[in-house]
Length: 118
Image 1 (tube, rainbow, N blue to C red):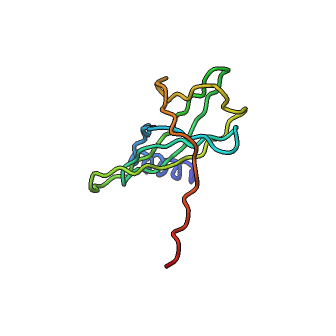
Image 2: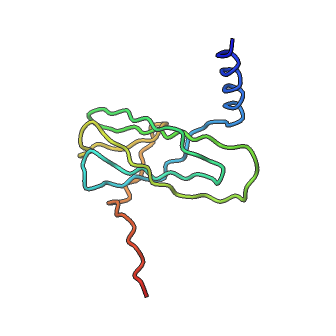
């Protein structure tokens, strides 16, 4: 009986946080051919929930799901890098979003460098 109560509460809380798909605005290659960085645009109330990767010989399809918290916040987008591991190197394959649209290649990902001390 306690398990049913916990499940009911969990389902209720999940219903307060609608999920959707994060907008992928590009991808970048890394030094590891089997890893790419997907760049997504999210709002202030969005959290990345999960990512799914489907690979074929000619393409890599990436879906990034987000969970949006309830409430209000100023309308502003943040661009968030998400590292995605692949079964095999990207090579000449194209990267697609969840709808099958080609994702723009934004070059090579470089870690941010610390600001020089003054």
